[in-house]
Image 1 (tube, helix red, strand yellow):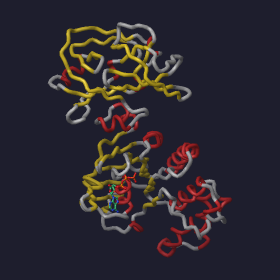
Image 2 (spheres, protein in one colour; image 1 turned 180 degrees about the vertical axis):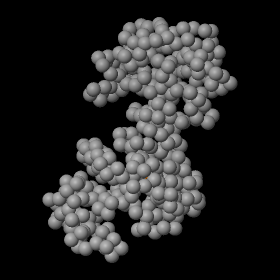
Image 3 (cartoon, helix red, strand yellow; image 1 turned 135 degrees about the vertical axis):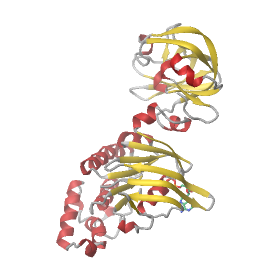
Image 4 (cartoon, helix red, strand yellow; image 1 turned 90 degrees about the vertical axis):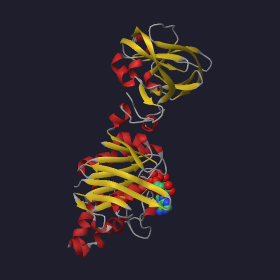
Length: 387
Ligand code: ATP
């Protein structure tokens, strides 16, 4: 097993900076995800670790060994591609045996050794009965397992996975997520996993690097990214539906105490009191700011206030005590166990996750409840989290 480190890595393609001064420190045995939109540089970063691309600047270390000039074959890493890249003219057995046969002499292996290694990894991945078949005779999920087996058979130090589940249908993808995570945990193998799917990254990874335009914006655990996103990009990339962002102004206010009663929001907000000396003037609503965070916000004028749909509530009853405003429900998407309502705050559309019994339909008047303790405040100029 191994630690993987990237220090100030830069990769350019002509005028495109695909990877822009990336620094990563991936721990031994860690499941680490590179997450970001299409074209943000995830695959290039992975290929640099694999040795399939050479960085223009910076250093790559595997287990404290500088590997910039080490051939991919000698890095002791194994990569799984999105399209599996299986050899169609070879049986499953020969596909899995391929990396061993390619290094047979170097590894000092006999054909018997190879057979026993292939059978053991095929057993581990539940594809032993398919060893004599050809890839075209297998389902997508089975082909995926063959690709995983081929990457694991020579017990690499690092496992590099590039969107390995994206060719599977939705149901199989969810099942394979659990499977992959189990395999990774059982083997304790350092894993770098590229995906543009935040749910995939959040559900599997120990830590995630969120990338955009070649840069790493934040590295953190799923919980850190969710609760303390470094900027508005991360805030809106993590979570579904995305966090609402309202353009607001910071103003001083008379000290007021707001009560936040639990029963009105079906428990979403929790009860408590909020004292305020500042307020945020947002479209259609003024939000109190707790004194504890007022010092951080003093001197800032324009901000984005971030509120997750799950931290808002709609109530049919008139309420006065909380940060509340009357609104009209514009749209409701019913997702079964929950529903997403879209309502209007001034010129802004705001999404609210509805759970429990409360059901609204388009055109309904409702009260939108905001728990001032659950909002995040971002500097409007820089997009960075203030508090
Ligand atoms: P996707 O999720 O779509 O695969 P990605 O985040 O993995 O995207 P990369 O494939 O790393 O992104 O690409 C990053 C940028 O570098 C993109 O602008 C892409 O067009 C460019 N790029 C990648 N490989 C090459 C190449 N071989 N030649 C020229 N430009 C490239």
